[in-house]
Image 1 (cartoon, rainbow, N blue to C red):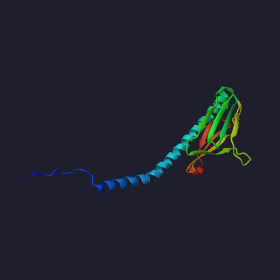
Image 2: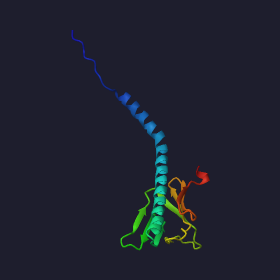
Image 3: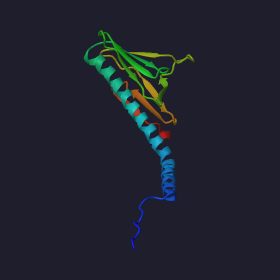
Image 4: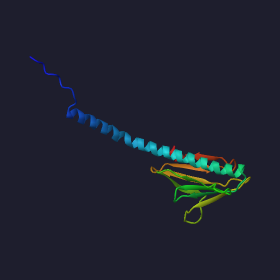
Length: 159
């Protein structure tokens, strides 16, 4: 008599159990991963804005040029212009991060583009930008008017 060869494979029930377990793990970890990605985007945007401020300050000081820094909250953009032809630089913030406010606040209710002039040898203007992500986390990017160094602050409520 001939022995039947054993059949190897996965049954439908085993496959359904594995799919259910994987779905459960994805459902549990996805919100945490999404929050982590939002936090990374906010941190990256804050660093990019600080570097953009630093570029503007160095251009004014080292090249002895008047530099105009324009902050456009509606477009989520920062623009840097100097007297050199073709020296315009633009920083568009990534998806999920927006410019919530520009300080010092203006007395009028309308928050259009804000322009700051950086003068060679002059004191840097007091600039502060509040960035927010989709979850409402905030970062404040500012220029210290005494040292002229950009810095990133995490509000106390966020820590």
